[in-house]
Image (cartoon, rainbow, N blue to C red):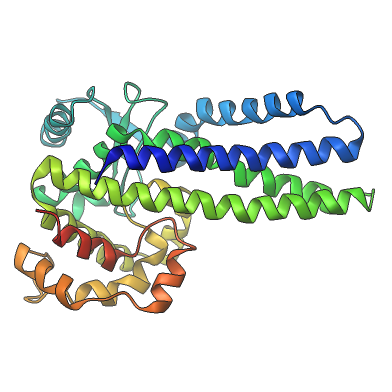
Length: 314
């Protein structure tokens, strides 16, 4: 998979999202009687820049991240160090998110500011081979620099939603209603774009993990293990982290829907997937039409399709 093609699609998504928010601000300014396109463009850029600068701290606080050093967890730290060297990127900070939902995520303002985190719950679910594959997936996000794009773009729907509610209940009718409708339209379109960006970045990170570890089946097994383990948690715990799911390796909200499909891959029912099981599953499994439609509303690709693609990685 060509990383250059990933960057081209990310650049197009950025341009479209910026055009949407710029157009919305121009509409607001015009109806308010002081349309200044340059000023509106600067304001839109300022909002995106603010999100870019603030997002790492927001993620750290939300996920209760505690960073570790080599002496704290030498095996985990060593895995990240080896994979970062293979990926040709600076060693990221390594953190443990104090949540029980098994997952992992990467974030940062740049590759040099990269942070790779696993949740407390993940460490109790995966074996070493699967954990390395998930870490390879997250380090691939850093290598592709897509986590910066996602963190920056995710503010656009939030801004649009805030404008929608602010003007919907305004005392001034007419213009305020038009602005609210425009904002809601931007909110819907920008959400679809952000979800699209999120899905394609996951496919590229899956491929990146296979490149770094040479074991695509290990990531397929990890996806299965994470999905199955998430279903055993109370729904309330899963809901607590749903606001962060776009950064996760898998979508915890979809775990209950996906688990019946991916369990079919575990032919010997030992709780893990080997190369043979992944190949057999890929040859038989096929996402349903409803799954493909629902994928349009998801931050992650369908897990069956992800495993099928991993089976095709040499």
